[in-house]
Amino acid sequence: MSPTTLDDRDTAAPPRPPADRPGRGARFLLLLAVFLCAACGLVYELALTALGSYLIGNSVLQTSVVISVMVFAMGVGSLAAKPLRSRAVVAFAVLEGVLALVGGLSVLVLYVAFAWLQLYMPAMIVVSLVVGLLIGAEIPLLMTLLQRIRRQEASSAVADMFAVDYIGALVGGLCFPLFLLPTFGQLRGALVVGAVNAVAGVVVVVFIFRRETRRMVLAGLLAGVTAVLAVLGTTYALADDLEVTARQHMYADPIVHAETTQYQDIVITRATAFTGDPDLRLFLNGDLQFSSVDEYRYHESLVHPALSGRRSNVLIMGGGDGLALREVLRYDDVRHVTLVELDPAMTRLARTYEPLRSLNHGSLDDPRAEVVNADAFTWLRDARQRYDAVIIDFPDPDSASLAKLYSVEFYHLLGQVLAPQGRVMVQSGSPFFAPKTYWSIAKTIETAGYATTEFQVDVPSFGNWGFVLAARGTGAPPLRLAADVPKLRYLDDAVLRSATVFPVDRRRTDVRASTLMDPAVLEYVLDEWRNY
Image (cartoon, rainbow, N blue to C red; front, side, top):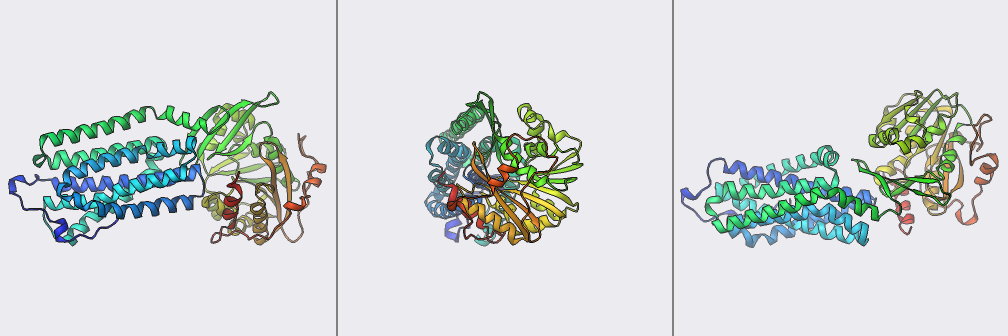
């Protein structure tokens, strides 16, 4: 809520007989309503930014657009509410009912706009504008109601109002990621908050100002709020079906598993490939992570060249599906593997969802494997072990949170846990579809003090895909397989020799290294992938 300048004329209400004033405790109830409204308003804001990050990526842009549009709209709403102060009780109740409906349904509306209409950004701006207007109109009305209960100086009333308002925003901001999102999910969480918003309006009208509200008006307001709660409740009951229908529209194959965690949207589809084999596909935030038909091409290329030297102690960062771990564990002399994956839901799925567990051969339950659910950047800062080989299997850096894992600073931290002769393999995107992104990753690794060998392979479900093999020192690490490499389905030394040759139109270009302060890789990936 944006502060609104109020003078005595704005906040003062006509004197009324003491008998008409609300009873004891009314001020507490009204400030409680301020608290709840502030919490709900911030949750709407966070829900819109989180949904945009899941569906579109580029969390910085999504957050910037939502916040700037909402703050602007809140200022406009605050001004627009001034004529309503003469009927503040009714206006506030109606306002909260409309806000509850719009805010509660906002996630569903935007999900539908993304899935069916391909109009997400325009829809997000419109929804943010409407929600912001309604939130901004709350403060002048609440201030008027507060003065009706007990007259006080404008500065004192503003201090009381905004103290409670900001505390409510704090609680709402914490509840969203820690309680609402993991308990209800995005769609249902917004509906629950909408219901709280509607009830807050009813409390103000019914329990505080019921004596000065005509019965017909009071009945109409109660009927309206009941209708809003009925719509939100019905939508809540149908939420699973609505979400499945909208989500399925975005995927070509039938969805067999879907869940939204506090970190990402996980979807697994299953179909029959052209070969007649089952095609199990994993998508994170809408981006394909693997197809069971050809994932062996990707994971053999990611793992085995990095294990051509010492490999007693191996670190895998990302790769929560367990497929890279499966390849590492094929070597009998691997004694210990640490898998660092941010999302515990992903590693739980890899352990318990039978089609995925069958594909990764139960690798996460191997006694040699240690699974750590943590942010990779933070984990590296405190890590003390030394690793002979490091496999980095993060999603493409299409958000600020992922771009930091492709930064010079990250690779500097990685050097602290890499054994002197250790090797690092980094999945680096597509040299064909995103050449600037690919070569920026290679340059970033080199800037951090590594020598690199770049290569590319063909993975039909991805197309052309690239990797960077790195080691400390000045000489480029040789791209080869170990003499005792297990039998592979795709990779051999001949394939690796040809993989280092890039066509003329996809050779190294002049790009910037990516750092925390200048995430160039994020700029490149968003620019290059937006047309695909």
